[in-house]
Length: 265
Image 1 (cartoon, rainbow, N blue to C red):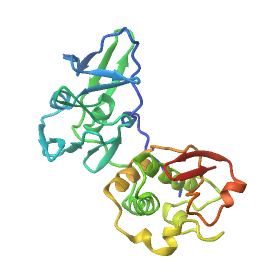
Image 2: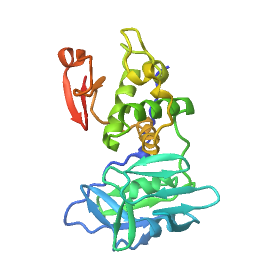
Image 3: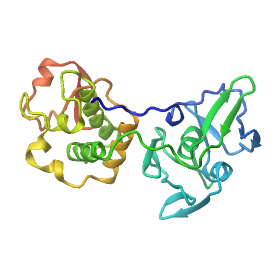
Image 4: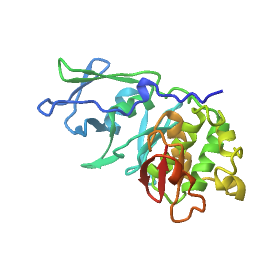
């Protein structure tokens, strides 16, 4: 059965596109919200985490161990400045531009925060208003299972432990691209351990696939399972300085280089 990646509209980290001259005005459930500290960067509207979270639900916002935490009886949300993801009830939400701190406030994309708290966002182009609607106060359940997360996080960690988040996402993308391609097995586990044409991934043969994954590798696996993709339609990757098999170089189309890996489709 093919993996069904969850790309729900409320989880998209895609931008709210505002015209440069437009002021950022916002409402939550129809009530105007002060947007004085909000800003738009590359089409994405960032809002102060504390102010908006407290309007979206009956929550407590605190700062602990270098992270902003939003909690309620049903919600545990963590935002670490500099990270490219926000975590809520075990799910990860992609923040491509990173979580920011501005004038002492933790800033996150409004769409991401709303989705992480079960809400939704609409852009009213006629009035230049970001309309936020509150919801359940918690994110929807993840659309993937524990086994897929278990194996995907381990292959990402084993193949790209020293790479950036983008590099980890790219490795995960190759796995999911294979799952969706008729030339390969249709589960994450079977793709990783596929040996029809010889060992496909070295960690599957040398045992490093069984090592505990890094925290960032787990986050990357969750993001890929949520639908985040890097390296396009790539089906192969290799480290040109370490690889002993260069079949992909001679037989496949080069896509891009991310960190120490070259990617091919």
